[in-house]
Amino acid sequence: LLSGARLSDGRTVDVRLARGRIEAVGTVGSLAAGGAHTVDLAGWLLLPAPAEPHAHADTALTALTPGPPDDSPRAVRSRATEAALLQLGHGATAQRAHVRVGDVQGLT
Image 1 (cartoon, rainbow, N blue to C red):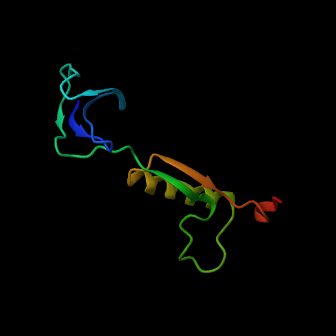
Image 2: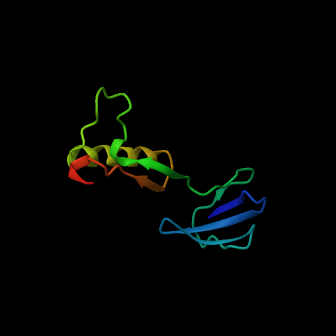
Image 3: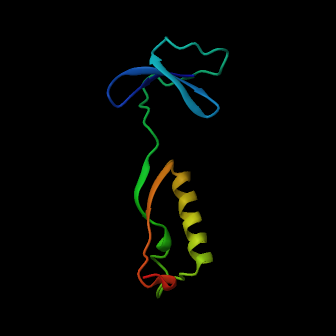
């Protein structure tokens, strides 16, 4: 149970988690911990996970690479995976991805 968290709209709430997901949100003191561990978040702001609104998975992590990036499916998959894991490590749980299709891999 996350207890006494302040939301961005100013409300102070308790948040009950189950199996890694939010199960219930209620006013402070309204949710029973049910024997679960309680974390006191009084004075802390609780925000949703950030999202990456504009990622280019095909060219991720190529800014410092001289010349054009390797556009092979294996290289793109590797860079896209590494970039997604980096973003997840910083808390982003959603991503809107864009890719070039023009002359890459024969697509037009």
